[in-house]
Length: 454
Image (cartoon, rainbow, N blue to C red; front, side, top):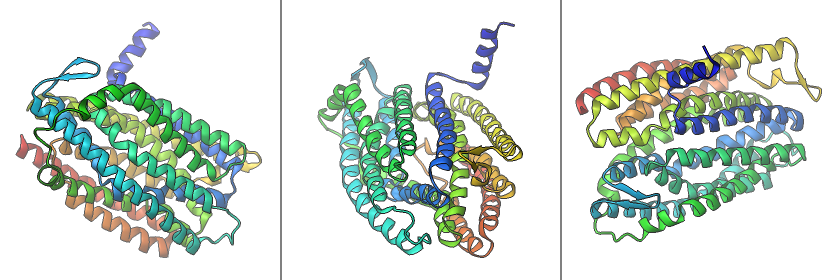
């Protein structure tokens, strides 16, 4: 069999279309980029600086309290409205003025909402960062973190302003195009991080890459979609998507789920930073960076299908919806498992052959095998939980509210209590057991709600 035939069969089996190709390439480059970044972090940063480097990311993630899940909602609502319109050209939508008007109202609402909350986020990030690091910095001033933190807060706030526009364009069906842009952005930001680390910018690289990346994204969006966005913005609004009656009843549930997600996924590093110091927090951060890269890659199969799922639901084509979803879930779970297997083998080889970077042993910058495996199991299980949640949320409903809150509370308590008394083993064991419980509960909700709604 010819090589091209083999490649074609693999691509077909894994369901790799152009949107997935660009999105997965983005995740793959991000994963490879993380590996290179890990090497450069080991080479260019001390163990203490590594702890700050990854804890920065966990604290910055409090932006979820300001975004409140609205990006995903924007994509879904735009997809529902756009399914009733047709493209005359790449910048012109034709159809009932009611749906065009509702699209315009969504764009107006999104821009105003995010402009306000991005300003609040900037102030909160600076305050929270200074309070936390001043209280728990055990390095006695060895690490200079103040200015890098302010830069990162600014970059995060600018990115928040642009994010609803990206979500809006995705909802219009421009998934492939947005994936291309994000691929370019990923390469650009990684280049900034690598160059900065090599040149000795240390913790400043996070803020610099965040600011420059946000500005580049803004330039690309304006250059490619200015005419389209202006056309939608200027559409006469005769009927609005009501935030109070349509979005809020759905958003508050999504928001609580996302906030719960913060306590599930982002609390590990700050707790370890406070209880076991910057070095252990750095090990958790580096391990999570690798695991999140794998999860991002495998979940690309699902996220690229959100506009398609939403459109099929709006048209009540449930049989087609289920066929596409089940196939996508199977493909993405295979990718996830293979990625995790490759990672554990790679780390084993690094440790077995005692690979060093600039005289520093790379293997001890990751968690030990037991806590690492206890983190890998939830990453695989979450592929199913998140996919089922995505499927149901495309119906513009949030049946995972209770399970998200319960999981978030349990993970927060587990991380705080077990982390205090048993350290990293306690945190990872608690997280693994809670995720296993969540899997069965999530499947029960998925099966019952699908029957009820269809």
